[in-house]
Image 1 (cartoon, rainbow over the protein chains, first blue to last red):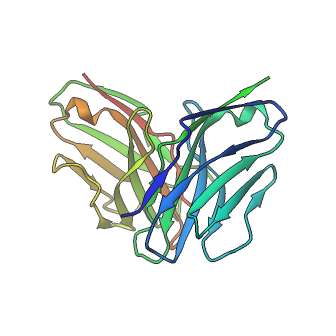
Image 2 (cartoon, helix red, strand yellow):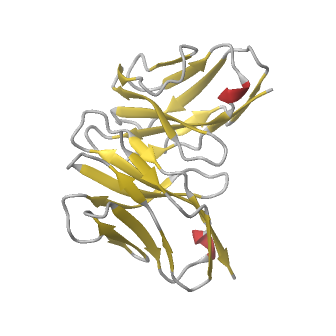
Image 3 (cartoon, rainbow over the protein chains, first blue to last red):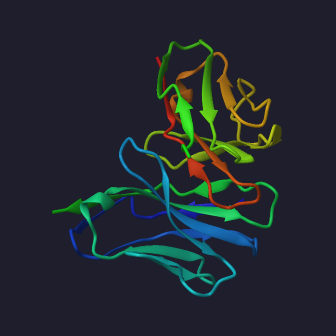
Length: 116
Length: 113
């Protein structure tokens, strides 16, 4: 079974600075996707960024980028120029794209605080 | 159009009561997922529909949990004889056919007293 591990229950960052959230995963599959989702307090989960395992190039979305290390099964999220609105719970998630069920397997999350 | 909606947003049930949680996916989305999110945890998969067919229910924790999507659109998650351990946020997500991007609803927070 696939597992996703987020070893940092909480992180904090000063506004305008950079923070990196860690994620490792375990799978024997070769075709998969990795995601970072953001869940603000009492608000719904939204997709931040995704990475296809077959792509070597790291995904970027504006201030958000990932460091995907396939051999190490590591998938970290870097948030640059942090803003107050970035404060939220962040979940790393895995999806086996080679199967027939596109269910997501989530880590336990990292609570990010942004200090003004 | 509108996003995924869920109702009710909050539900308090006495232990032993039955509850029904509703999910309205984005129009045209073929796939629909239910997840359970315990306090301080990540969401965990419960069940998956493609149109009206329930293709995977391996995550349902017991036979007290039942989900349906009879017309391939709205889905209902039913929990019979609720227990305290059922207290959680129940998230619904939908996606286009064979798409890897899931859109989540706001969730239903169930509290069993």
